Amino acid sequence: GWLLLSNVALAGEVVREQFYSPTLGYDYPYTLYLPDGYDSQATTPYPVIYLLHGSFGNELDWATRGNLPQVADRLIQAGHIPPAVFVMPGSRSWWVDGHNEPARSAFFNDLMPHIEAHYHVGTTREQRGVAGLSAGGYGALNFALEHPEMFAAAAALSPASYVPTPPSNSSAHRHPTFLDERGQFDQALWEQLNYPAHLEHYRLQVIPRPAAEQGDTPPVPLYISAGRSDVYDAEYHARQLRQAMERIQPELVRLDLYPGGHTWRVWRASLPAALNFLFQYVGHEAPGETGA
Image (cartoon, rainbow, N blue to C red):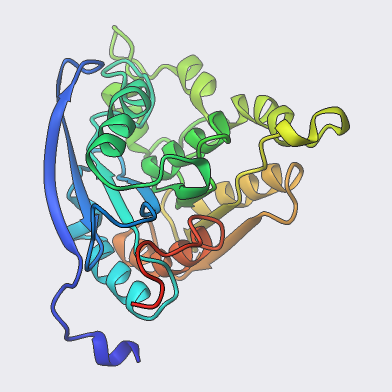
């Protein structure tokens, strides 16, 4: 019945907010999707997905260009995903503590505690997911690998997780995140922050050890997508990423390829599959009255 819903007005609420971030020293903006009937007193907190924008993007991108509100409405109304809160933060960096701002530290130290204090969202791993496109896919992947104890699943759409270095046409080469004091691209910083640097620590956290099975952190299931004619060769890099992750968690990686480039058309096309994947693992109980 999706066609019947296509002309229905937006059911969920989209709000734009900001708060002062001590880590940044200035206001941290974010856009929020609250599902239809959002109830701050519901018995069960809502699952929450943190959705990261791309290089030189902002907190409005997913809501205005990515069709997140319409897709979430549709999937919730069809019963494919539970009513959930989506947080779309704004960052001037690539979700790392780079040369221009400590975006990673601000996300974990300021944004997440702010969201959890002000909205009725889950505060456990089981209730949280992280996703993003391009530089945001790079960020979501890094967050999941660095903190598998915090996220139940992750999705990286056309992730800008280039190994060993970004292609010459990538905006990484001109983004203040990676430019040193001489204005040169900082290859050492890139390697230090990119996913291969996190893999061994991640593997040691998520591989079950007989002596400590109860305390082990489970692997973070990962959804990856890319356009087949991406100008940054995202398909190649996505395949490399899948291969690296399959060595650690062979059953918990999925790669979808779409016709198209490094564009919103591809990200909009892959968003429903990404959300369906995330909610196989994130927050299975719908908040409030199940019979309502």
